[in-house]
Amino acid sequence: MSRYLTSVGFGKVNLRTLSESLLAVTLITGVYYLFSYVPKHVKAGQPVLALANYFLTYAPIERLNQPAYVIPDSVKVWDTPAEIRLQVATLQSGDQVKALGRFRNWIHVRTRDGQEGWVKAGGLMDAGTHEAEDRLREEISDMPVQARGHADDADNVHIEPSRQTAVVAEVNPEQTLEIFGRRMVRRSYKNSPLDVLRVSAKDPLEAWYLVQESSHAGWILGRRVHLDIPKSISAYAQETNLVAWLVLDIVEDNGHQLPQYLVADREGTETCDFTDIRILTWWKKKQTYAIAYKEGGLQGFFPILVSHEGSVPHFRLRLMDDAGNKYQKVYGLFETITRNMGIANTWRRDAMPEESASRPRRQRTGPSVNMRG
Image 1 (cartoon, rainbow, N blue to C red):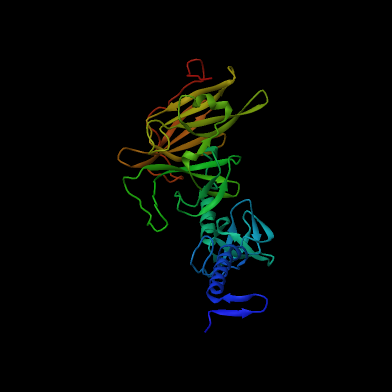
Image 2 (image 1 turned 90 degrees about the vertical axis):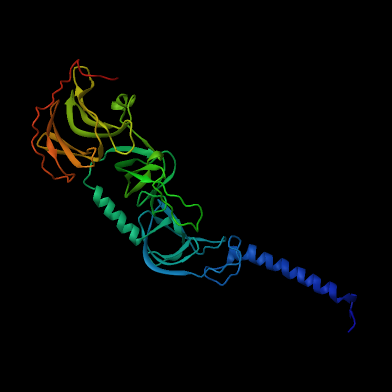
């Protein structure tokens, strides 16, 4: 066969040159389709062999068919997970949807009003995590807040004290966090997505706070939380590591309602939650707070519990001795006098203490009391 063809108006055409040109055009078209058109227009689950971020892969929709709940303040619902997409709805924090399927990091959902669309997977929690969070909120519902603070930056709240567990809330520095507990956990390491989670006894310990913000409860890394100590008692934190403050009662002074506090410090250790306590009562004569009682050398753990019998506030300290035995000390605040009511040999919150054999320690709020500020 002749290497050349005669075409009207074009003369002789080289078949080899023509085939090479067609091959080049095909390659260019294929690259454009796979790396530009497909990521922008393909529908989830279609048999695509290449995408911009997933070369030579195939990703069908994973069927879910289960309830899910919105985590952030709001999330957008899109008609497709492709780059070119239209917003079809907006969901609010706590809204329930039906998760129909997963396509990479997108979830196909149906809203309660029947609208279907796609949301980023990070904006939803599954039903199991939602139930676990409900139990956590119930657990802390009758516990006193130990302290308040805020995250230093935008951060995640997890269902367990670990970076690898499910996220239940996203917080920002403007949100107040109520702190109910603290736990020391070995830091876990995961070098790559294929690694099995590694935890060793040699790994460093890190503190996590059990917190509640708005309608969510969970765990956040302690070093990322800044405590917001009340201004009226901030002077008592200048030389100590103040970690908790609880209102025992309210006193009146010239028409003003003033709280009296139990404050807890931690010094020289990270393994327990507090080592020292002080009772701050209001000294009307000096118009300031005075240390009416203090005690140190404790191995204390949150939560510190506060209750009232009539007008008398009582508080319980959960403590541990050097042998690891758990017990509680129970106290009462009688005006400005703190009285040790006894010891209970368990951490059960309703345990009745044995009457203290020692005489109550009394300190008067007067000039002999150590004052700051």
